[in-house]
Image 1 (cartoon, rainbow, N blue to C red):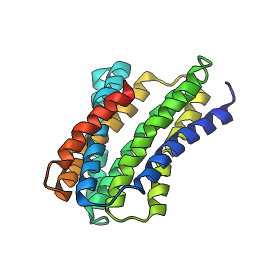
Image 2: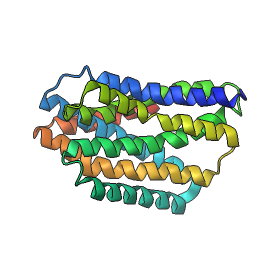
Image 3: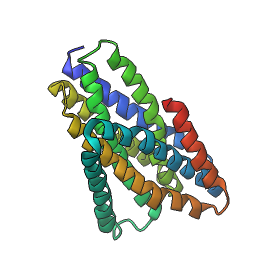
Image 4: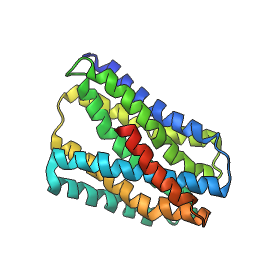
Amino acid sequence: MKDIGLITLYGFIVGMVGTGIGGLASLFIKETNRILSFLLGLTGGFMLFIVTFHLLPEAFILGGIPFSLLGIILGIGLIIFIEINIDSILKNPLMKSSLLLGISIAVHNFPEGLALGSSFLTMSDLGPVLSIAMLLHNIPEGLSMAIPLKVNKTSPGRILLYSILTGVPTGIGAFIGAYIGMISNIFISICLSFAGGTMLYIICDEIIPNAKALHKGRASSIGIVLGFIIGMILYF
């Protein structure tokens, strides 16, 4: 497939539909502190798996340790900068968690879009297969961002809108990937490690502490373990 417009459309569909389905699924989850604590833990465990076995290893392979460390440092630095500036605006820690996680997922989706756009220019069957795989794994990412919003009693319309918007960078990345054809491995490595750094910081500083604060029992810890295992099942 060589039609850049069609490739870009694939990218937007993969990103926005995937995360949108995740956001929609969150609307049907029962609201109790124990369940929401479990789901936040599940979110943290799943995202931890993505960082550990998907984002950072790929970043190391593509760009080596120096560029990967640069991306991680830049990602954490950005999140800390945003935290400092939004603390005075967003007093609710769950809203802050969702916003920061949404940013990291959006950043993560951009290099995925680059890979998707480039894949359509190489092997004829790789692009569609990769599209389906990305769409499916974007669903739990949309759910991950939506859960803190649901805990904070955000309206269903806004939850769905914000979930869909995090998928937009996939389409932008697909356009650039298709237009340029081959993106620098170092550039992709920095993007992946940047997203990995932001996610790792948010998981440790926001998601897991908030999950434990909702319910003092074992629900969040069980959720973290199960989220990690679900990640293994989905990716392997």
